[in-house]
Length: 66
Image (cartoon, rainbow, N blue to C red; front, side, top):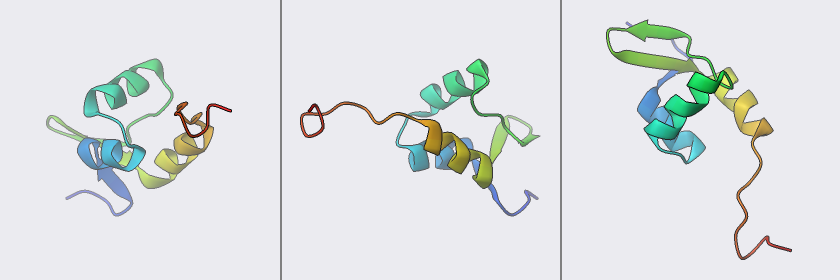
């Protein structure tokens, strides 16, 4: 059983608004580390996800192009 406070890769990607492939790239670069692994499933800590989300720069859109 997985500890409370951990999210799957799919849930983490959805929370960040990215694809699971992009999440793997972020993890490979060392910007976000997984906390637990069970078989092929990787789990991320909510506090790590929040900390990473605060460091992300928002993408430019027509609304905030300035």
